[in-house]
Length: 448
View 1: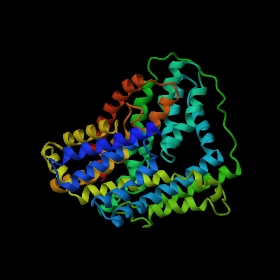
View 2 (view 1 turned 135 degrees about the vertical axis):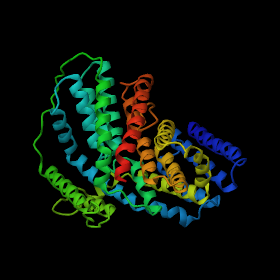
View 3 (view 1 turned 135 degrees about the horizontal axis):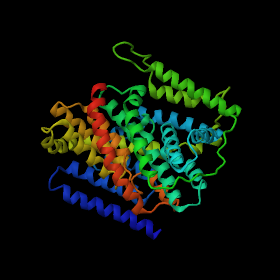
View 4 (view 1 turned 45 degrees about the horizontal axis):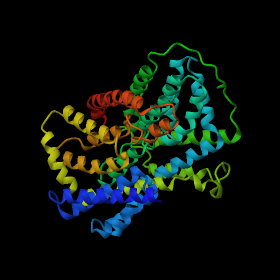
């Protein structure tokens, strides 16, 4: 209890200091908002209070400080994107409950040579693909025991653990539901009245980046190891009846999303709400003939705390806009707006990538997206392009354990040291920045 009290007092102290610094440069409302955000980010990172509790604080603190009314704050916790995530997670629970993830992992691993480099590529790609539909935290937790079972060599354990952690972060951006920053981007775009990026178009855009990162990370992690052959029982399993039901649902969902996606100017799509589609698919799992999920048994697996976290992120974004902080910071970023687009994107990418190493990527992207929107609005830049670059960079942090849950899980296994993670991580951070900006400037700008 004493340790927890110290963490809470530290968060309050940092909030007060932030207020004292900001009041000299910004308005009272803006300074109070920054103080609340600093308080929350500190409590998120030092775990002084449970994540869900901290995520609900805006409903209390924003009205109390006059930043937003209770209604203006609470409405963010019912953002449609939250229900897209809920539907996706219900499907993920069914995949885990039926053991389908083990079959997928086993068959993916079976596609690659049984060598060190082959296993590294298998782990990266398996982790990445699973992370595109499951949470990267769940994916890492599920695959890490498999990786550590493959060898007794300490150096190989380290490389295998990093393969899974980095693969989960890389693959998480492959779908809009794969990682929280993606969902926050879609939610903020909806709030700003911007045209949403269709599910299939999102995947088409980011697939080249994901593929190149898979290759680069696999090659580097596989360098300098002997061509050992690993004996492990990774034989495929026959699908059970319940697993087949989930597979049928997943295929049906993918087909519906494909048919629903507009291909302008040739095809306008079905016009169905993607959050509605995902939620409907998740709810079907409770209904015959599926009957995979049961509310009393599976409700505890639903990540309500993450849903509250999304709500907090959207509330922070609303506060940044309402207080005028977005315009204020945007005016300072305007100084970079006259430079070539590629240099501006490099600055944004580097700033987001290295800042998210030490803070919550959810909180960071919630703060930055409204600001970047204002910069684009005032300069005539492509707001969607800039916001997508920032969002992807928020997921591509590889240096520190606190940067992402997969990094923390890999560290907790005991197979990876901070020094090793930082050494590999800074290379992948820089590589990610360059690839993201290059692909954004050459491909995304044509598609958005």
